[in-house]
Amino acid sequence: MQTKYETESFRLRNKSWQLRKEANMHSALSLQIKCSVCLSDFTDPVTLSCEHSFCRKCITGHMQASLGPRACPECQSPYDEEDLKSSRLLRNMTSTVREHLAELKLDESTPKEGKATLKLSEMEGMLMCSEHDEKFKLFCETDQKLVCVICRDGDKHKGHVFKPVKEAAQINKGELKTALGFLAKENGQLDYMIQQQTTEITKTEDKSKTLSARISAQFEEMHQFLRQKEDEVKKRLEKEEKKVIEFMQNNQSVINRRFMENKEKEIILQSALEIEQPDYFLQWWNEKGFPMTKNMKQKADMTPSNIKYMSRVKDLTVLPDSLFLGPHETHLQFFVWKEMLGSIKPVPESLTLKNPGQSYLKVSPGGARIRQADRVTGLYKDFNPGTVSEENFQTGQHYWEIEVREKPDWTVGVKMRAAKSAESEILLHLKHSKGYVLFCDGKDTTLNTQDKPQKIGLYLDCERKQVSFYNADSMSRLAQINYSSKQPCCLTLVPGLYLDGVNSDPLTVCSYEFNTGKR
Image (cartoon, rainbow, N blue to C red):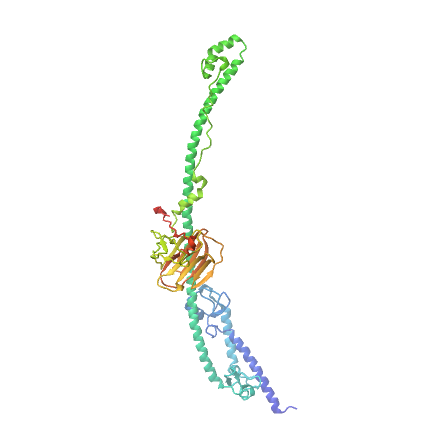
C-alpha cells in the first residue's frame, strides 16, 4: 500500500510532465509567428514567391544591405521588390496567437481542482532532468550539456567542470556573438564577391558579343573581298568569251557565205542537167553554164581530160574553243588566296635577329635567317649556339612564323630578357634523336605528336602571360604554357646541332609585308 508521501510525489511528477508537455507545445506555437531575421513576432508580415515570410522592415533592410542579387534569407531563391506580398492571414494569425499566449500567462483557477495553474513563464522555464526529475541548475562545460545537482555528483560527470546556468549562458552567448560577427564579416565579403563575379560574368557576356560582332565583321571583309574578286573574274570571263566568240562568229560567217554561194551553184547546175532538149541545154550552156564552170576551174585553158576546180574550202578552217583564263581557270583558289593575303591584317610579324658575333653562327644581313656556319673540322660537334631578337615584347599579343623545313634539329621559343636562369625560357625543341620536346621551368616534356610541320607558329600573349606553339601548316596547336615572369620577352632561335652538315639549313623568320612586295 502506497504511503501518502509516495502518492503526492507521483502526482507532482505527473503534473510536472504535463506542464512540460504543454510548455513545449506553446513554445512550438510561438515559433510559428516569429520572423527568422529578427527572431521576434511578425510585424506587418509579407510573403515572398518562395512562400517564406518576414517582417516588412526586416526584408526591406535585407534588400538594401544586399550588394549583389537579392536572395531569400532562408532558401536563397532570388526575389525582387515586386515579390513582396502582404499576408493578411499571417497578420491575423500572429495577433490571435499573441492573445492566446497572453491568456496562458494569467493565473486561472480550475473549478474542479480548485488550484492555480502555473504561469506560462514558469512552464517555459521548467526544464527538468529526465533521470532525476530535478531542475537543471548547472552546465557541464566538459560535456557541454545541462545537468542537475544530482547528475553533478554522479560517476558520469566525475572530474568535470561545471558553471551555473546563467553564467554559462552568458559565456556561450559571448562566443556565439563572436561567431556571429565572424559570419557577418564573411557574408559581407561573400556578398561582395558575388557582386564582383556577377560583374565579371556581365563583362564576359559583353566581350563575347563584341568578339562575335568583330568576327562577323572580319569574315564579312573576306566575304566582300571574295565577292568582289568573283565579280572581277566573271567579268574577265565574259570579256574573254565575247572576244573569242566574236572571232569565231566572223569565221562562221565566211563559211556560211561560201556555203550559200556553192549551194546556189549546185542547184543551178542540177537544174541544167534536167533540160532534155539539146538545143535548149546548149543555149543555157552558152549563156550561163560555160562562164560559170570556167570561173570554177583553176586554169581557163584546161582540156576536158585534165580539169581541176578551185576549192573554196581549202583555205577555210573551223576555229576550236580557245577560251582560257590562265591560272584563274586552273589555280583559281590559290591565286585568289595569294591576293587575299595582301588584304589580311594582322599578319605574322617580322623581327630582326641579333648577330651575336659568334663564329659558329651565320645571321643573314637582314637578320631574318640564322644557321650554323660550315665547318672544316669535326671539333665541337655538340656545340649548339643560338641568338635572340633585337625586339622586346611586354604588352599585347604577337604571332610569328618560323620556317624550319626538313631540319632534323632546331629550337624555337621565348626568353625573358633580364633573367639568366633556365626557368626564364620556354622552348620547343626538335631533337634529332628524341622528337619534339617542350622545355619549361628547367624541365623537358616529350610531346606526343605525329606532325612534321615545315613552319612553326609562335603566339605570345603578354596580357595573359601565355606562350603557344602551332603547326603553321595546319594551324593546329602543339603546346601551350603559362609563365609568371614580369620581365620583357624576346624570341630565341637555335639552328640546332651541325650534324656533319646534314642540319646546315637556316631557320627563317617569315615575313608577310605584301604592301612592300616582300614575303
